Image (cartoon, rainbow, N blue to C red; front, top):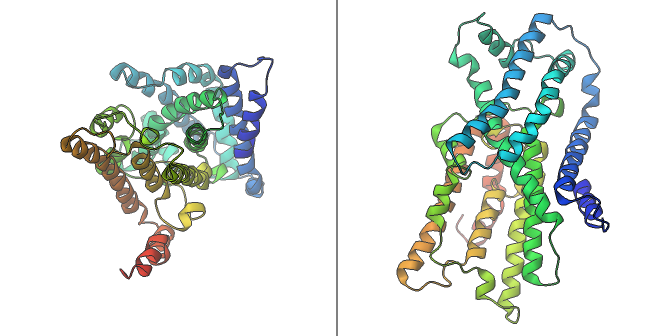
Length: 386
């Protein structure tokens, strides 16, 4: 998927005749990456699809009904959020999803039937939800909680990720590369953002047993959800207000290319963002907030449990340089407190995720391994702290 994205960027940027504008090019590139990503995930699993199990027509009907309700909700929820919150930025998604929704509803029976014949689930959450929708079984929250939370994650994140992805790809397609350190850092930032959002959007949109990235469990605690959605609209405005600096200075205002520290800072900032998007790549189609889709222990996750959160916070501190540009000690404290609050929110996200995932033996074993042999454990032993 990443190779296709890079190739597509180069291809569309070399379109000197201007036959494809950034609006069309961004969407073509995104959907091409989606297709290649799904295909590459399916091919290694093709042996799982050979069998054919009998499927009752009533079971198919109930599951299709539940899936269709979810697909329609994916349009209604962002429309409702846009009405309630002016900062909800999913107008582009609402319009474009509305165009493809009829096709998804028509294809739902074929998709569900094909999957169930090859990877049957029997009376799963979709079946029970269908029974409740048709009033053939009384509503019982404990029966539907897992499915509702899983779809809650999709409803919240898919519209946001798609809109941000399209905007980031359009920006990347029109980005002007200049042989200047600050410009190169900015370009790498935008590229990393595109990669991160491409992986995230794919993970949310294409969660399926076929791809081995279905949601197996979702965090059901208020603290877990609050600490997560605090980093997204509409609560993101609160986070921005708290972390808002007393000045608008960044690292390029503090350092100049004739200073050796400038180059050290530029390298550190670039490395922090590269680690972040490498962490996203490690997830692949298993990317998801608040969910367990299977263990990810390669890439940066071989060395620490939360490389994405850690590197993202390092980037913010290095880029913002809260100690520069302040006019008083109060401004300094305010700047430090704002960034510290953001880091605390991500600390809560990390801890609530761990609390949720520790119920899975493979994650518990992974966490123990990182605690004993991870990068911070090794640094602690070198410093004599362990």
